[in-house]
Image 1: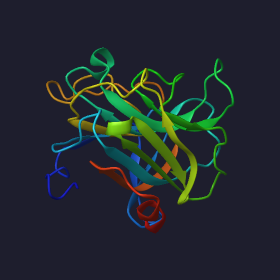
Image 2: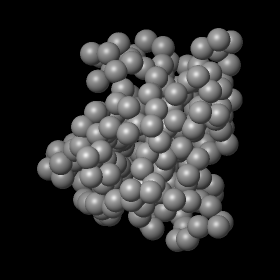
Image 3: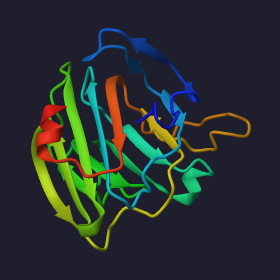
Length: 212
């Protein structure tokens, strides 16, 4: 929770990130192409432990390229360390079916943890939820409160091990959140609006996801 861990005090953005008071719940953010918002965080789950990522999102058109909703990262140098989990819409010419919603470990979008081969409709608010159970290496993916795929399990392709001290919305970050304070978007930008993003260190039940 952002309040308990004081994770609401070090937000940095690049590109065009604006507050949207007409979001699904209210006071969401709208991101344009090449935009990203990053938050330095504490108390986040290790990438190989029980975890769940969820949010409301609405995009004006089906993404023409891979687009990240939420990315868990290690800020030391995420592009090099490879620590992280990514939830988003995948568009990749070498992978079918496309476009699809999936969660993948850092830089392994062709071998996702869990995936669904249909992107939700445009100009409509949809709820996305990914949840992971570490003891069994199982992943689930829900859209609009409905389980659409999972549990999937692949012992040869678990999440990478790593600590999380940065959460990015709308893309991944290539460089350190500290130091110079400069950010470089990763090139998988999401264009649209998102609201009520949650990251929790537990495996959510179907009833919990439905209630959200």
